[in-house]
Length: 158
Image (cartoon, rainbow, N blue to C red; front, side, top):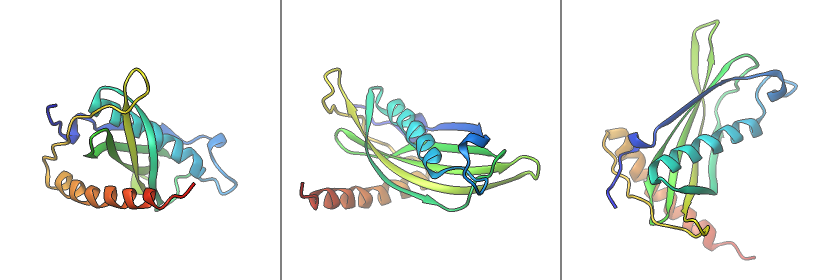
């Protein structure tokens, strides 16, 4: 399979935060953010491999700042690393207060997706070809995160 750069999977999503999405503090529920993150990451993974994907793990989601009622949530996702059938996707989350002209990073998340065939079985994905310095940096870090995921999964005893 021909390697693909992260730019081919890059995806952006914007939405306004409405009252039903907020808690009693007037900020977006964490579960709402997780839903947005899972959806945009799935789109990026699908764009990379051109196949159906399933979420294998929600590796991390760090909330750095709140997004308030009426603000805009901005999410950006791209594939940072690939295994044989799996892909790591990085999602950055921003909040934008349009009235004040302010935009800030409010979170970062890493998820793992597996490509599946028409029978629901894992199937190979194209390798990733990082091009920019930032993409190369994330690729190197992703190798360490993948090794950590593997060790973590080996520790599960059901």
